[in-house]
Length: 184
Image (cartoon, rainbow, N blue to C red):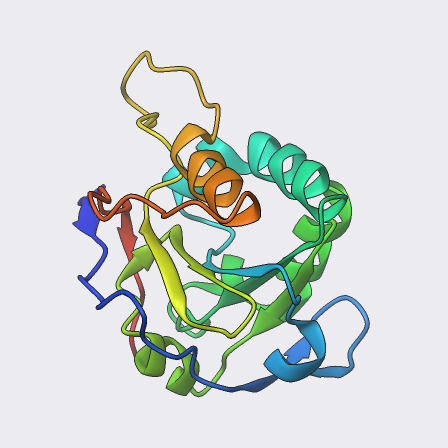
């Protein structure tokens, strides 16, 4: 598995708008209806990536914990499903149900949303403030499939804690590392 780092995106950048299909409900969902006044996490994930699989259970736990504090979580899969059928909407739905995702799992078939966000890998995390300005773009934590670091979500949680307490989110943000997005 080749490691790909997330692209650098300037903090303060406005979140690109979107409207995508939620694979569980089948309904179209927009950023405007999913965002939170306190903060919104937009994450690019998929089903087949070992980096996503490695953090999946803790990601669900972190999302559940911070949703009770008013943070919204949105997962998007933009992978080419023709060459990566494990990432198809049907399989996305199965994964979301199996892991009891407490967030929507949206399919970006055209890959326009991933390109608008300049997403590069899975997982790739973006935290936006209440005005949808980028406050954090970085890793979940230091855990990787082939290291012995425990999965905690500490980097994402620290950024969310700072956002919620209206403290500055550190500008020293370590890029996310994972599988590259599978472009068409």
